Structures are given as C-alpha cells and as structure tokens.
Length: 210
Image (cartoon, rainbow, N blue to C red):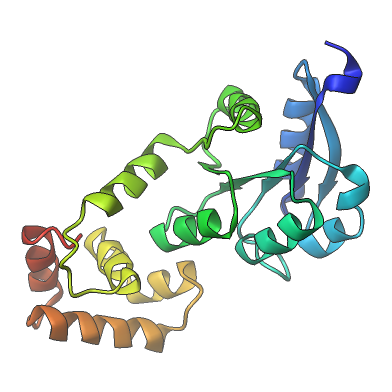
C-alpha cells in the first residue's frame, strides 16, 4: 500500500501512557499513520484541521471540554472525520449521547489491540464498531418495555443501583451531584410505588423497565 493511502489517525487521550501506547500500536500497523496525538480537545483544536485525520480516537473523560461535548465541535472542524470513542465508561446515557452527537463507534479500553485496528478499518468502510457488551446494552435498551414510567436517566440510575453501585459512585460516573441522584431515586420509588431499593429493582425487572 502506498504511504499516501494510509489511514490517518489522530488520538485525544489525557493519559500519556495510554496515548503513546495507542500511537505506537497504530503507527506500527501496515496501512495506518498517526496524524497527531493530544491530551485535550483544546490542544487538538489548534492543529486538527492541519492533521486532517480520517479517524479520531477520542476519550470521554478529558481535562476541560469532555470528549462527549467535543464531538460536535470536532464534526464542525472536520465533517468527514470518523470519531471512535475509546473509554472506560460504559454508562448507557453516555453511549447514547456520544452516538447522538455524531460518534461513529464506541469501544472500551479493554478492547484487544487487533480489534482497535480492525475497528478503525471498519469505520472507514462505513461501519459502526462497538465493543460486544456495549452493543448488547444498546440492543437491550430497545427491547425494554416502552410503557415504562421511568425517564432514560432514572432507568440508567436504577440499572446502576441494580449492579450494586453506591449513590456516590453513580454521581461521579454520571457527572452529576449526589443530591441529583437522590432526587432521581426518590422519583423512581414514587413512580414504581415502592419503598426500598430491592423492591424497586424487582418491580423494574418484572416489568422489563430495566
């Protein structure tokens, strides 16, 4: 393959070790070239247009503007660049926000190196690569009972509670404050007519709300 036809990849990832690891991995692969690597969107914004990447690997949790909020700004700068989210976060709301904002795929950081390379190729072919369990979450969300009284955010919080996460942890992972989480839980109990976490989870599962 001519070096001129290489797939140009840029990376925005604040962890230097991870960023350099991805850059080495992709740079060594035949047919791929690293166009630029950055620790934040603000740093990348100055040079992305010049880099002109075909594919951008984007972390969610970045200093300054988050990866999710950066997507529309990147699409404005580079309308033809495919954005692949590569993150540790697996919350449903973040996944849908990322895809809704224009991300072409969503991978978790435990994705094997060869799968990351094939995902870059897949997105160039018009695909929408996702880690297997992310895809299952997306499918599951469409299989839920549409008559659920819970909002998407309430559903997500109840699902997090069902996996054993604390209110504090949920608040941190969803970028909301603890009082907001408590308020959502109060609404969930009211809507499901229950008075405990266990009853809320059971009622929601019995009715396919989660």
